[in-house]
Image (cartoon, rainbow, N blue to C red; front, side, top):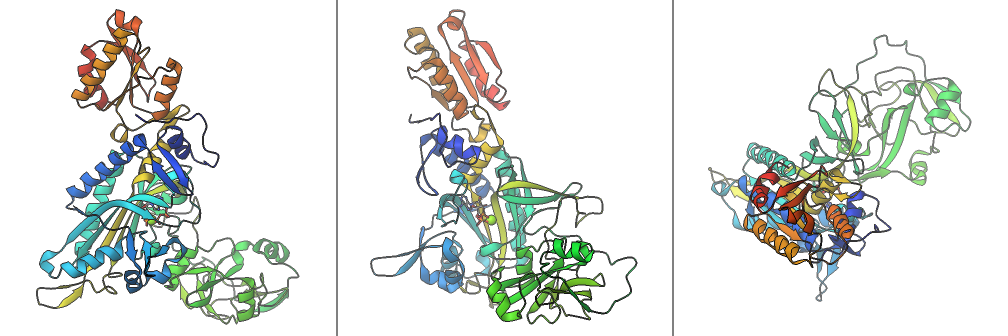
Length: 564
Ligand code: ATP
Ligand code: MG
């Protein structure tokens, strides 16, 4: 077996799973974010896939396999050819026709379904595949955890109604919970934003790990949990003793641009300052307004506006449209639409930029001095804030790795692609869709993030590449070789996937490699122990070992594994 283990981690590796997968000879990099999977790595991915497959089949999923290369026309029909941006790898064939390498398959499955499924009698339908995706990620890193080419299980469901879609969504929640539990992961299901996939209802399955790229907020008391991109703020209460309204007054604030500078200079708390952030969007320039001690959450703002994209505006764009220099932008007489957090209109007599150099207003009051296009929760929440759902809890914020993501899409794809069914009255309706993804490689990597020690990987049994490894102390000694071969053959016959380290290396090398690749049971066979009819069995996880009668113990190993 080809298991090219290494002593050194790759120079660019930042997280432990990346280091260990390379060192354990599971993967090798071909180009940035593009990896080959070697035999040991593939055994793990196949195990994750098999668990996914069983759980998808259990809820009525039908496996399909769709092409990775997809015609541009389909993506133009859905509107994503122009919206998906640089992550979409666009290619041309010899006839100069445009294609992309699929980052996801909503368009392709919808094309199949619109051509083949016509009647409400054929619905609901649930399809899934396990296939490679390509996304030209800005920052591929962490090995196969954020690759450019990676293995995903993607599933798509089609329904006559939102209610039917919600039933499958609930099945999917159960299936995903089973998948990640069976993979031995400590995970949370969190509310999520729908991003470029779209739709209106979505959850992520997140594995808690400090190395995770996502921040998640959850209540320390109830079951509320959300990606920080979406984490809701509790609705603010109006002030108990509102101040007397003061008139709007311009004050000089030379060179005081930040909330902190203005707060110190005028002697007012940051809570009494309005922070005005200008964004460029596909719907033009807009301003997001939050209290001075808060941060705008661009994703919540984007969802409140209902636009496709948004990013902080360049100083030049702001100046052209508003005449206001950076640091002095404020809502009063601002010639662009204002979207405000609910905390903004509550207090009276706020401080805000005066839209001219070195000046602010005091006594600013929403409604009287400026009008708000739309009010809604657009700010980031912070650790310790009250839970938006229950009355007791407070926010905790932790890092995590998104391993699965489920969506109810509504008619986002079925409407433009005209995936319709005839209902019982013979009327045509757009199908309601859902889509559901699991990162296969990322799940394996996340399992390593949660299950390792200083010596290497400690595989959870269900996704371990092998369950046992036989380590002969010296395979050149006949008695040891015979006992090792017998152990190996007997264990396979008992259904235990077993590896035999028949190399002539020093014992220390074999032990180090066994610890590095993380097989749950290590069976050490040496001449001395054999003389007294014993072999040694060590558990990787606990590092505990004991002597057992040979060959009787072999029959007990399947039982031992169950207890791990
Ligand atoms: P992320 O926010 O991490 O970029 P995403 O939200 O774009 O992921 P989805 O479109 O929801 O990802 O894809 C479904 C699943 O595919 C994810 O939950 C994740 O497990 C996996 N996945 C997504 N991007 C990658 C990647 N670059 N490398 C490995 N796995 C990935
Ligand atoms: Mg996602």
